[in-house]
Length: 101
Image (cartoon, rainbow, N blue to C red; front, top):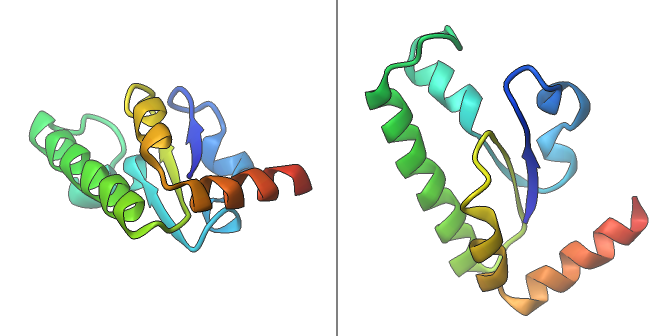
């Protein structure tokens, strides 16, 4: 599990390309803009709620499958408990990759 988190406009997408971390990636901001038909501003609560559900499903499904994945998000509360639940083999892979950077 690779997580890129930070404030809006903080450079997450500019400095950290998710595909460079893992084959599967979920960018919550991009998905919200997609569902909002383009704009990143003034995203309705209904769209944010839908993205949050997709985000949770993506994370839980990836953990259950035991595969590495990357996230870009403004959220921080989900990550620590979910990282703890990640299978040891995947955590070891993540640990080894982080040594290479």
